[in-house]
Length: 345
Image (cartoon, rainbow, N blue to C red):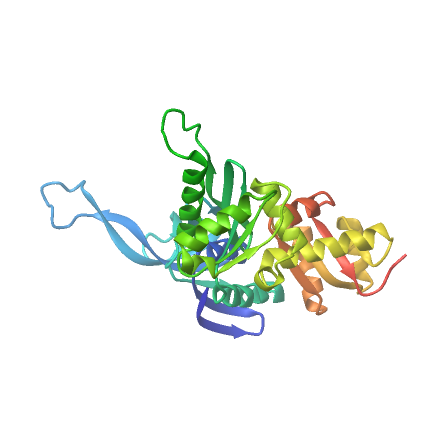
């Protein structure tokens, strides 16, 4: 994420941003809220003035519109963010319009109240964009899954299975290993770090193939263990955090550590609260050090009020992604919880 402009007067003002990745679009999904005014370039249909013989013919014109936002949609697998609302500046004022925000589309967000957690999210997005990508590659005999570590979880990049190879006359296992090595190299293009893990010895054999066929990639691989592949294997690698030099700074790893700390405190009846009622009580005592909120609940009025008060009292607000395991565990507690400065009765 790039910050193009920051013009704040207290908590009110405008911030202009340029999303540079899918992660940045996910951040924008939680930065833009109902009631915000967003300016961005978009297209509107206007009559084709030059074509007098066909007055009904329309052409598209690129204009900068200001839209009062009423709805926000993020489509991870389509790589775009849709911001829908009523036009208040530009052409066709009063009409409804959808701003389609993609990677490389700059936009300005005007708010009456920039909460501390929203400003912190922007700072996090800028820092994360400067870190190298991380690829998780999990392999067992005859099957492999490859994912890209995003700030909201792991996005599946490839799933590979070994064919039966009947009648082919070639070593199907060797062919499978070469195919997996090639897929990892493609996913790690641009210098990404790679964590190679899995049960058994398949990962070690794959590493030998990579060493001989992709020497540049081989130097960026860290080895780890996992009892399975697929989504559960991704979760295991992140939860264990064994490859700290690669994972410790990632947002999803920080969420995993926080949720582990929360469950430890709950298990020992310690400094934790969960559920709206308990968290509200802790907030009234000024006891909240870190507020953990599932992204799907962050826009609810009662939750938003707690987030504002925690931010105002210098507590931390962490929005958890519902796309991955730490968010699933937080959802099991009602989607809202807190780590406390002191235990309350």
